Length: 173
Image (cartoon, rainbow, N blue to C red; front, side, top):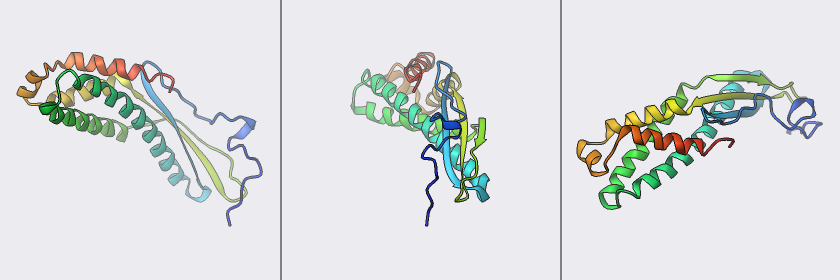
């Protein structure tokens, strides 16, 4: 039988803001991952909190990037453009997953062990938007054929700048 904590507030100190809180800004995507798990498996709690933070950043990136791709693809039509759009989406997904795989915590905290032996783990990560835009634009440049680049008038610098603008629209999320 699962015991509920005596206090409905999951955060210490009477505040509803979790420890390790980070926010997006013009330079970074940021997220605080949280996980409630056994105090006997604090390493697993940490891994799950990190995965939670990565998923939040992936969702923010994916939202911005797909919006940018939709706007970008509207300039080059729909027939062959669908194949190119698919390549752009796949390359972007592969890049962000690789970058997130290397993410390191900028904050790690555990809450107190509860009566039922459970503990909250909080972990924060930041991913530089410029680095992500650079790597994604490079990956796109590598996946598109010269013919596809010509067909959509692909310019790596302009593409990178479009991404940076799309990412900056996510500030504070």
